[in-house]
Image (cartoon, rainbow, N blue to C red):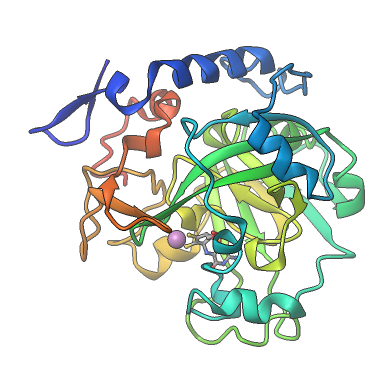
Length: 323
Ligand SMILES: Nc1nc2c(c(=O)[nH]1)N[C@H]1C(S)=C(S)[C@@H](COP(=O)(O)O)O[C@H]1N2
Ligand SMILES: [Mo]
């Protein structure tokens, strides 16, 4: 298969994703029974994926009980816990990377309720404590690529987004699903005029149902630190980081495309889709390369951040127009 990162430099998918890893992912998807997930097929199977010794060692230090672990970042070494939790984007707590770790202590992730509304047959509210009992927790090591050009590799703990959304029985009118972050000036005193609050994100419903779409409640086997989006955040490894919305309080199904924060603020710079794409530059910088935290040299950015299994979601779209 040819994946065109740019017309001059077509890259074969085998160059992007080492064969063994791709096989792992295929097996992973097969285990979940979600090769082509539909709303009805959303179950939570038990998979027999064995953890690498290093992952086991790390999780042993954490407080979360993990049912299974899957490397989905090509055996890359995860970015150290300290970096992942001290270099953050979370504008509700300031615009500097060091501010969320300093200031997010005022957020109270318990008690916490998530409201699910809109085009669904079973809307409702769910308490975070009940939500945590719904599924066995799994760990997925994913690459994360910020639109700004830095990236990390993180072992996220949580569960697939699709089966969770399916519980609320979205109707046939549910073409999109929107997510809203808490906005409370008492808990987020550092939030200034940087963005129109609350922070909002959204997905097409078929994107949300893709087995790679994940809801995280922890990382490295530990409960999610506030600065990383406690108690509940999206993790969408094939999209630029701003789609992975933190501290979710509301989920709404809708027929028309919802407003999303960054694409509303700067539509020429941040699209609704925001798929990682080295072939489409940001108007102010190139997206061809990125810097992994802790590494000196830049590395090439991969189409869909190295997750070609999502490509079929976009086969009818010109990704230069719908970026
Ligand atoms: N509510 C909210 N969610 C957010 C953001 C934010 O500012 N507010 N920043 C986004 C961006 S730009 C990135 S890169 C990731 C960063 O996640 P991390 O700090 O856990 O690495 O969170 C995303 N989710
Ligand atoms: Mo980002």
